[in-house]
Length: 333
View (cartoon, rainbow, N blue to C red):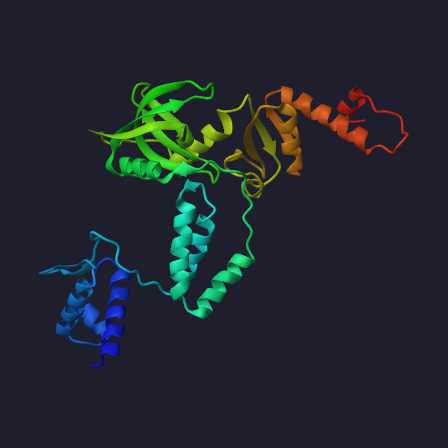
């Protein structure tokens, strides 16, 4: 067999090993149309190139592609290459400090070796896509790595945390999961001193250190739901509950999870829980959704809605028409 044929077969072998966790020699030989001995030689060729291919003998044994001391070249199919390139383009404008530059470097490498037909598809997707996000807070990548390892290894973390009043406190926590809303990063963890679950904004953490103190992970709230409740309620002066005549999925399409949460109700209704510092803004926000609404809490939100209705009625009247009193508007006349 020619060198080109051997190289092509070795690349096919690499693709198979990346496809699933384990293969027997017989399975690989059947896929490649070669002998078991040829498979063993090709595995040695991959090892010489830096790919950590592990082999186990006996019943149930086989070949497995593991992790090594350095990252060898990856083999991507067409769909994987397109998905990776599009993700790198999006990451180049993300909220992880330094990740944008690294993403651009990786994208340049991928774009250099990508076939023209795939390059054209990636650029078509990018050219037809705009990202609409508010200004985010950049997070140091090393902090993300430290917290990710602590979550994985179940070790306690110490840090200084800045509250909304500007003061800092020493905290020791048992981390569970990081959650990002797209604009900010949060850590859900059990606060050791308070013996309760807490949400911490990563941009408010200082001097973060992973300790050697291991803890046994136990039952905990769902991280995404817990962080969402904290983000939508805790930071605000007012927390409103409003029933909407709409299916939950309709409201979720209009209200981002970092702004409000939607709870299922009955008979075609759902409940929106949303926080804010200004009741007038909350009334306007709910009205803009375009659904029939019923205020559950707080009662003051009804008054704010009536005042908003009066202002809108005043704006809508023809020039020179008699003013409408706030009382008549509130009564619906």
